[in-house]
Length: 273
Image 1: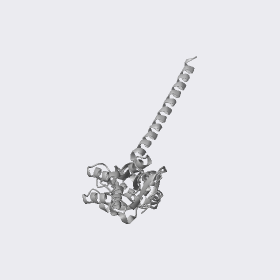
Image 2 (image 1 turned 90 degrees about the vertical axis):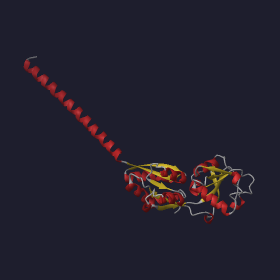
Image 3 (image 1 turned 180 degrees about the vertical axis):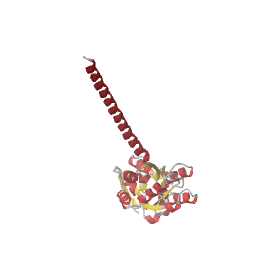
Image 4 (image 1 turned 135 degrees about the vertical axis):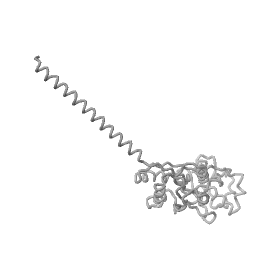
């Protein structure tokens, strides 16, 4: 091969090398830009912590994807007895929105200026029902008869000190002078979902839960519904907490709870405003 041909060969080889290198660099830059875009989109999602009465679990889980998509947010639910949640907020636990199963705990936080009072809204309501296991052969037509059934040895109730459902139950039984009579049979639970579990598993013969909780289980029977005039009105207030770092988004979530879409979801789980 003469010098001229050899020079042409090396020129072609160099051009091919440079072209391959440029393509590889472009590809890496393109992948880097895509990764950077994905990362930016993920970072832009605003986190929001919702401290809510555990009876709202299923309804909130259904609302989660809807709100997250509409507001580019990332919701985290802190679920439990309303009293415990209020105490956590008192102690400085991070929370953007509080949803209580009664007015008392929200009133307490408002008095201590731990919520933004102008964001407070009553978003839904509920009923107290008496339940038994599907396998239990029980029939109780009135709360007046609850202490006449010999087979009832244990009655599960949310702790009235921290669980609104337990407080409503205590009020209902006190109204017919049965609370003290049944005290030896009452098993206190940390929240209303634990009451449900006790009855489902046979660790309690009967229990008092919200109607919405009863509707989540195929393993229990609703024996009766407590008359609403036997206890305080069951109302779920929601409000933005004072220490939120995302006030506008938190306000948007409270407003979302009042929307027709959210109210339809709540109704489907047995809640009623």
